[in-house]
Image (cartoon, rainbow, N blue to C red):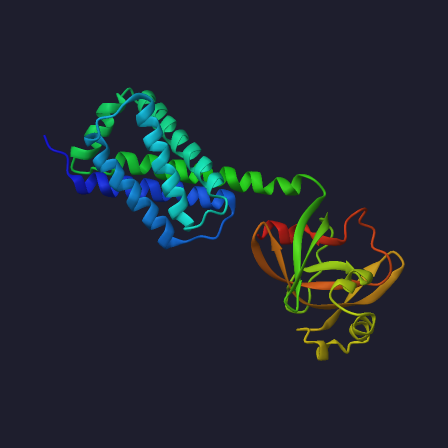
Length: 276
């Protein structure tokens, strides 16, 4: 029997690409298709030539770890957080190998036999790629679950961008905040004093008197907000909200008076969190 090299290359390329994609998503790094393709091609090439390299034991482990480090570097072509990429990629590679062993053991198939059959059968990529895809989906769901832990408490850290200027704030998660502007964008409520980061006292006064268009604010409008003490008109305007590296078009609502949100600087609705 003979093993087709193209099958080995394609198999390892796709699996490495899946694992590297998981690594990038876990660390919330900028996604580079070219980087992941280069890293996966390098890993696949090593998988082909590695049987020809006559080393074993500690040297074999160090060689594979060195390859993983190079792949982690190539994924972003940057030394920034390269050790984090390396560690997470190595962890996922180890976990995927363990998952394969568990699956084949459950099916009563020897791992060596399963790998060999996978390369000489008429559907050479089927077994490994299905396992890889299942592993990929499972880890992605785990990542989403861990990211959503922010909703387990009553606050979340995020960024507000107004006129190109960003500020990190701590937001109180209020399930009762279902405010939206006329376009249906969710409203993040800010006390008027918090606008001092972006605007002078004169500019803030202009916003409150509906003169903020001259400042470059988009969709400056008002919504009617009801409370126990009656209702009032809240000024709203477009802003960008960034949570865990994901941007969302929303708007800021400027609250009159004090906002009860503890040590937080803003009030954000849970609906906006769930949409990201």
